[in-house]
Length: 367
Ligand code: NAI
Ligand code: MG
Image 1 (cartoon, rainbow, N blue to C red):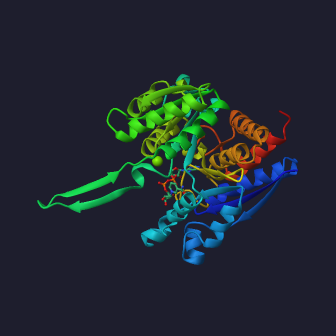
Image 2 (cartoon, rainbow, N blue to C red; image 1 turned 120 degrees about the vertical axis):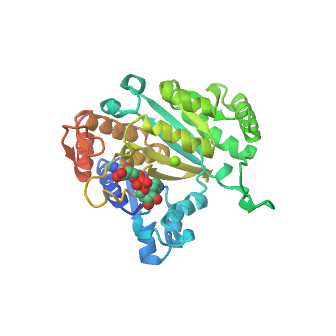
Image 3 (cartoon, rainbow, N blue to C red; image 1 turned 90 degrees about the vertical axis):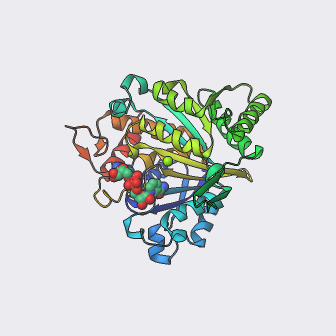
């Protein structure tokens, strides 16, 4: 039986609560004989600051590098609001992204039939929605230099951010999108603004060339990023995979997220380069540490459990197991089991642990 090494970094607030449910599900897959899952657990974020004075120790980073996949909860909270910027809880996550080279952020937007009414759009526009935003995560305007605020001679201040992309950076993110599309509905929409940005001109050019050379079998559409935002709220089901840069991806993935209901439902994956046949990867819910509900057994663990499903699919190649887990989530919701964030009025909410148990019951049920 294949064996997989997983590093659990539960973090702060509801992070440990939702990570515990993912661990329960993982243990179930182990018992079911799908693989040997060797887990290690370490501290990150505020929890690591409290214990070690830094948001990520070198030892934890080493474990992350040695793991086949990292399952990350969430970091941060008011307790650490006063710590110096360089060692704030979020710096632990940024360090992981940087040192693992996680350049591709995958954010699925799936609308479960049972939750279509919770969408910000009309149910018929989102029912059956299943799209994937692929956001470039390590380049672009968030990192480009110069990045500064300078005072001019006339006393005004001027702020500069710099959008930079190389052909190599564009190629590798586009390749991730095309590869994903081949396993889905075989369509990619590439979003940029070549009408006003040089980086957009290069983006479109590189994607067009890569498509012609290696992915001509995949449907490709170029769309201006602002139009893409409109299309996402007008008719989101037209898309399969949307690939875009760091800044546009930040915004478009948040737009797509709200089509599907609660923050407690949204998983994500961040993938790095393939080295020696394996790809570095970190899986985490989109939400933060939710200090307002931490410790109340109220957090929805499905974003974290959905992130585990992505790990099964993208890091371990266990797509049957991933399908089975996704189906268990769908059936659990269809059966009316809801945590507080997704329970409409008149529906009794269950706790974090009960939601995890319900998922395991559905996994055990014959499909
Ligand atoms: P948040 O995502 O933690 O919470 C926003 C709202 O959504 C809250 O009302 C919360 O109760 C609710 N919520 C979030 N996840 C939920 C879940 N699984 N089930 C039910 N309800 C859920 O964002 P917020 O409040 O802006 O930030 C709180 C802390 O988290 C801050 O310290 C922030 O820096 C940090 N954060 C960390 C992230 C990470 O670790 N990747 C991402 C976003 C924020
Ligand atoms: Mg965002």
